[in-house]
Length: 385
Image (cartoon, rainbow, N blue to C red; front, top):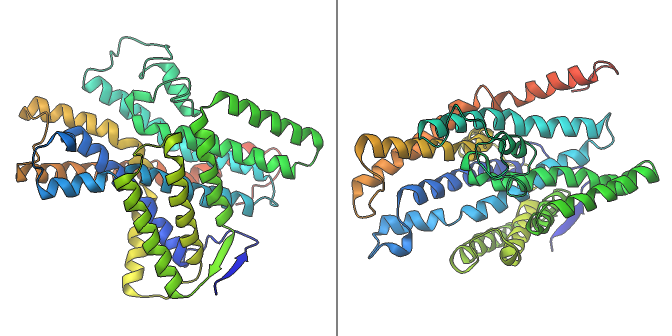
């Protein structure tokens, strides 16, 4: 029988099986999202293609997992962000450090990406450099820029630059805010602090849409199961893995392909199987050449997965403009094999471009965090790493 243990702290050790899987899944989820958006931009819809070739069927099937990839992001964000915060709750300045960590994580990538989106919009003729707008309905306005910086896209302003995947960052941003407020409700040092946290939560619920609040439960599931260790034999672990894959395939084939309230039950079921599997993998892996390679590969892609997620749409817009203006190609054909090579080349450009773009920005998140903490906490004492 499996043994279930409630951990005192979330296990974030890199040599554990679940840590390797988390890195692989973070990178893979971003790659799947990019695969889907590039396909939808350059290929016709699957249902409009008569007698689709096998290659196109495979591409469309793989691309259809993009919404599940976002659910994976939500679960892993709760596991890593929420779990890490709980680990540090009794340390010095936990809420201040958490705020700096979350803001720096978002802004160090979003600010340069939004600048790229502006340049891309100007390059394709979507932006007039001489016209500055403050409208809350225009995607390139100052209001949209500032609103996207604080998670108001799809709530008050549109995603900046038409970068539609940013909808999920609105969810993430408010989860980052809601979770410490929930902690304050139960761990606040005074009645006033707890009451203020309750009022803040109520105000946020009134501000954001219902789907954001609904899917917060999936984020919280990631937090909760980061403290659950399931000691089980290989039979149960393999069973959970096959069940996870099977659930993903069923959702892909039969489910609601959108992160809306009507799709919540299927994503909740998938998330539950997912966290059960991760919890069963909370043990140290044995060193080996293949596993070490998988670990390095997963961490490589995970390290710039956020950049890849938010940058690829502006880059796709530029590539589409170049394809049309230079070669007269507005859409690829599923029936021309050479076009799959063109698609693969564009996909490679997106991944490599995001990697190089992350080096001066996302790769330096830790340094920026420490610098900010040193500046903000200098007046009250030495900063703890």
